Length: 117
Image 1 (cartoon, rainbow, N blue to C red):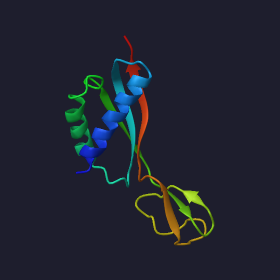
Image 2 (image 1 turned 180 degrees about the vertical axis):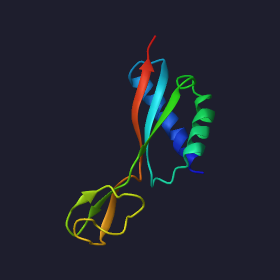
Image 3 (image 1 turned 60 degrees about the horizontal axis):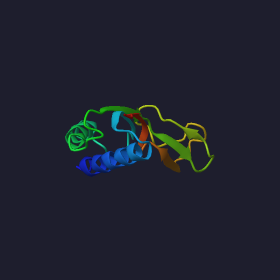
């Protein structure tokens, strides 16, 4: 249930950006969540709805989640690709098995829609 600590930090970050931009409220929060980030989307949404109530800046903010697909890089031939289905084991170019996940494990704050007075 690390979603609650992540969302708490997200609200803090939103408030920090609002302060830097002289915004009095945040209308929309857009985050990207990687498919291998370990985040439970429903828990993340629930946590956001709970924590935003405690923030005067985020109280009425809408959360928009963009699911980000995994991207792999073959360490043998340097080929970068997005696997189809859950087939992460073999490089489609050289058939190598020395793969690294380069995207899809993160959560990013992508955008904020803020309003001033």
